[in-house]
Length: 570
Ligand code: NOJ
Image (cartoon, rainbow, N blue to C red; front, side):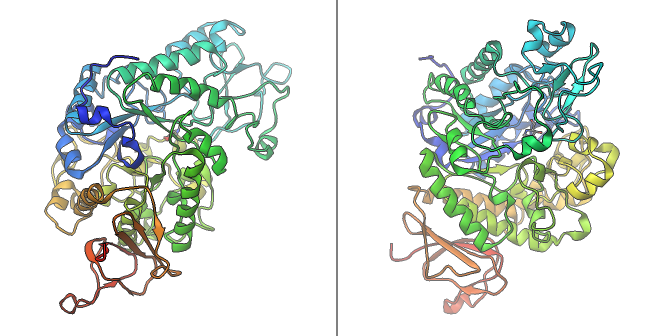
């Protein structure tokens, strides 16, 4: 058992189940707060805003990659897994941030990116400097090409960001990159790769990190022994039953069994959540099992329309699914890969427009003239209160508490996302402009240089309307989105009990979903357009104004609104 001398208060150290119903706030560090005035968010910026995080009422922060990186993919191209990007801070500042968060009662989850490193990682540089067939190349996935001179890539696979998934190096060999050229895939059959990641997990766990978000958790194990390799078309047709050559192979769980042994060296055990775009509930449950990572994201709500039937089916299915793993649910409406939900809900329904599923969907854009902002805002607030009343953990993305919209008009030359740069103009028409619009630095004040983000501008351009949605503006407005989130999280802390959920069949209709949590906590959401009567009970919070005459006790819930009540009988 590792003896820890870390910054957590006894309260934080003692609870092994803290994650089951936690509210986790995702910080995309380069866009949160810039204390050094270079236009890029940093760890000191986060430290300076811990009071804000504490007032918001979150339980944990998930920090997206902050490691040294050339930013070919927003930091998901990691040069060194055990250091901090000098533009973002230092290891000492990391320790100070962890201590300050813990002091405020907030836990810390960091992102681990194990499917690929960056092409600047010391082992990839060594691989490039070594000849074909050398041990240094074995840590990655190098192959000879096809054709007379090896000039044709080993297969016709395409990368997630577009273009071929293989890139040729000077001596003629090719290496595999599921994502950008700068993100070579690791060879997880290699014992040194496995061991090095265990060292990384211990490195951060020893520094007091409470948990890990595991990037592309389903992709690590690969079987590329077939010769020739299957074509892209054949690959897409292969069953997703644990034997697929590149995704969700059964033996990926051996990797996580070794990770679990490391997590369990600590008190309380370190936690993890798998980012794994897997449709089958049974297969997803493997990652969420206590012998594996313990939790797995479900991205169902963020792929759904604002629709009662879809929401009910998703909740019902996911409640069933967690019984397979013994884990708790994970709810997500926004993150750094998808169009912000306040904007998404102001667009026409997804079906027939961006019907793509899975990771491709993250690239879907949102042209400004198609967005009904007011409708999006009402629906987003209603969906958020629906989400926050559900059992399980809720993962919030920075800025959603402000009701921040996607920024859709970033000039092409200022875009950073490889998904933009590696797609053709035709593909952009279909799939959108990439993910920069959700990663624009946060507005803290109504006016001023970069709306209070920092003194040195902002690495992505902020629109003029950011001031109205700034923390300063919303703190002054009792009806703001920020105030709703603060109230909701405070109430959730007070009301959250067991993980049971019972649908109220009397109140639920084709347009209305009502469910009750232990202790008489009732959540009612009207997905339709016509107001509906609310039942008796103490009104705790509503996502928007109610209809009806309060003086005579009549309360009606308008369309696109959620109300939380405490049932009077209890
Ligand atoms: C999933 C991450 O969320 C995304 O931002 C990243 O581009 C890919 N994995 C590759 O690391």
